[in-house]
Image (tube, rainbow, N blue to C red):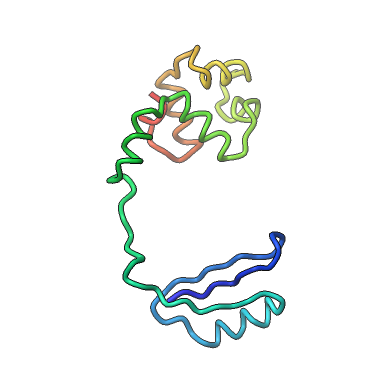
Length: 129
C-alpha cells in the first residue's frame, strides 16, 4: 500500500510512502501538515513487479554507448558541479581545461584520476577507465 500526497502546484511537496501496513494515524497527520493537498491511499497491485534494470535491453544498450568521458560528464552534472569545482575536488593542480579535455575525450583519464573520481562520486573506478 502507498500513501501519496498529490500537490496541485509544482511548488508544493510531492511525497510517496510505500509499505504493507501504513498506519491511518500517519495518513491523518499528513493531512494536517498538507491541508491544501490531496492525500490518497493507493493499494499496490501485482503489476508493480520490480525488475533488475541491468537485465533490460535498454540498459545493456546504454551501457555499450557509455564512454569514460560521457560517464564523467554525467556524474559531474548530476552532482551539480562545474568543471572548475570538480578540478578542485580532484586536486593535485588539476585545472578546468584538464576536466574539459577528459569530458570531451581528447585527454584520457589516468588510473590515478579515475580512482579520485570514483571516491568523489562513490562509484566503481571502472566507470572512468
